[in-house]
Image 1 (cartoon, rainbow, N blue to C red):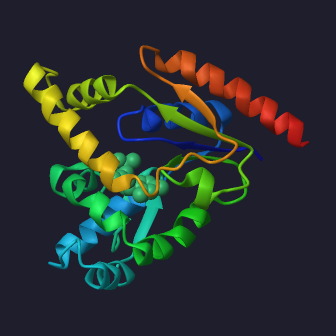
Image 2: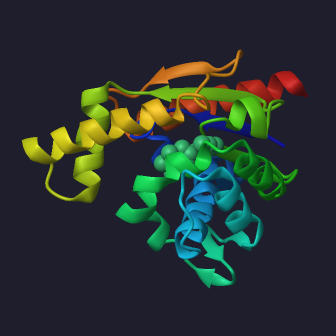
Length: 215
Ligand code: DC
């Protein structure tokens, strides 16, 4: 079955494109960032310092993180909305940078990918989570467009909001840099100025052709 990875920086359009592509291909959409967000919530709830690797690892190894029908569960409770909030967003890059945290979450992410086909989005989906994916996509967009999209998602995209998001996005890019290495065989798709349906059409064509070459 077809496995597509979609990696790229915050605001590149990964989540929207990955969800639409998964629906078109009839496979699950695995959001690997949700695991890092849930792990970060576990760290914050434990009162641990997100930059303390040992404390973060202890909090994460004591937490039960699951994904059910597109929702994220922490210790049996639905935390999908909370993990998208500002407290988790501010700390997640710091928690995700700890190698021990990444090692703990990898088997959970791979289990969700399963073997029935998937669209897997993240930063290292094509390099680490599913290195043998049929199609690997590296999604990009200009820094200005990424900031405008984030501001629009959160409310009114006025100049002050866009500037604040631009600063936050460049901070997260720096922190996420180690994970953000495009996989060797990744197809780079620049989403700047393009609509979601057009990009998804392109990826469906690429995915079907990649799957056809495999069989
Ligand atoms: O895609 P997102 O914004 O929900 O990701 C949240 C954070 O998790 C982001 O700062 C980078 C990190 N992340 C990661 O390190 N590796 C992944 N495969 C996915 C996300």
